[in-house]
View 1: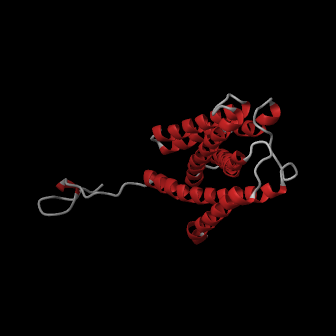
View 2: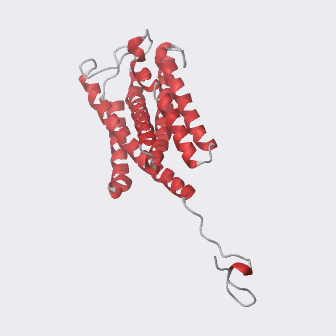
View 3: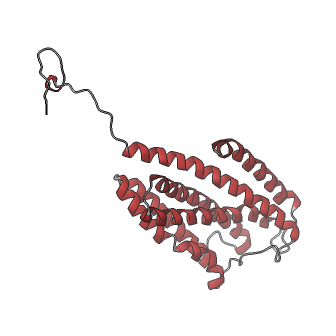
Length: 239
């Protein structure tokens, strides 16, 4: 399993990323209304999907930790928050680049964009909390609570285009787009999924090593006090 995650999956991710880029740039047709600028969809959409998926994982880990504390669960919660924030930031930035030629502005306080921005700020706060709380147990508990609260915004981001009037289009499906656009989007989505798993695995191992180092008992050091060790001129203290 470790070999698959650390050797095979990164290669699969690279191959799929290259294939998705080729299909999105050269194989898929331009959009009828937006033209070639629409091709950014093949990166923007998978990035946002992976962000929502990783942050949902953070929610699951946060709830699990409160009921069954484990450093492994806490480490995965930290890893998923960082990875989710990374993909979410990429998705929002690409969306802004897409919005400039489409809507005429890089940023507008549209319901989807606003809720996504709130989500990113919330998880920046989550990670900041983890940096400022030194006690591992308090950090894990407080972070779990904040992770659960922050996760409230995740479904709001997804459903915002359906609940409110929005410049952002509603979620597409294979039935609502050109069939030639479906394959590039799916390949790119699997590429980002593989990349997300690689990032999660690497970041999880780092976080778990940090937790183990924090809670490990310090090694006993030899005392310099002759009264506490045997030898000439000193007697052993017997309890």
